[in-house]
Image (cartoon, rainbow, N blue to C red; front, side):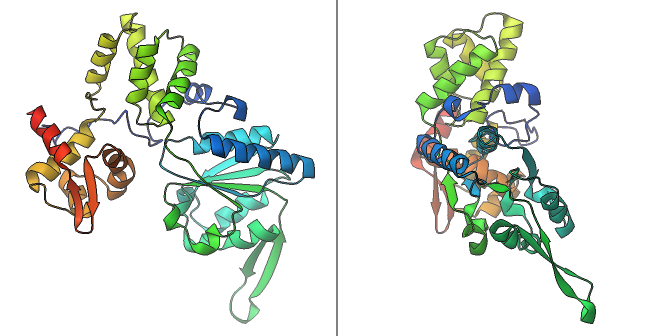
Length: 336
């Protein structure tokens, strides 16, 4: 069983809070659409949209990316800016605390700039309303003064493109979603695509890995490029010390050292399953109850832990709550 008192860092978390070296992380990301692996339908759509905007000599239509974390929504935004020869200004929903923050960002944009806002579902509703006229008419409509002296003032903006990223499309209001011409969903990558990404990036990190090792790492990456790159950098670190990490047996030992088992579950996955199995006797349980029992945020469990457990058939979401499956029970029994 996993000790509840010991909290370990999750190397398989798709969250971007992991302390990656920024320079190395950027070097592992593709810079152009031609070098981008996976998301074939989105690549085709973007290539047409980008080419059309260039021919018309107009700004790109606003884009909304949504999907699980770690699928390179930010990377695609950087690629779009590069392909459009535009400057990319980046921020996030939680960082915009007041209306004046967003007004300052928008008014400082230059012609053809691209504004990327991550975690847009966390933007406050009163701030969100400013974007309605900004997106459609490139104008900010604000009220100045108060009471009988109050009046509406329109501030013109230079033409720009807006790219938003979110893991929760349902959390966005309908008026906001309807203002996007391009609403693109990023799906999990295929094992073959993940293997190609690892193969390319292993050469960048100067690691010589055989086909079986590349496939082994790709299977543990949960179909997510960000996790694949993290695991590859872990292997790089062990290769630096051990000087020879290029066999399956050595790779298996590396992953055991970072608490990833043969089913690619880490400590938090196992802790989640064990709590449902032992503390709640496999009965359906509400998410907030599970979060309280294992001292984790509901959003962390819902966005990071549960998607993979659902994919491998270890978890069911029922009307009465979360419930582990018979396969999960057999897995836990085999671990005792």
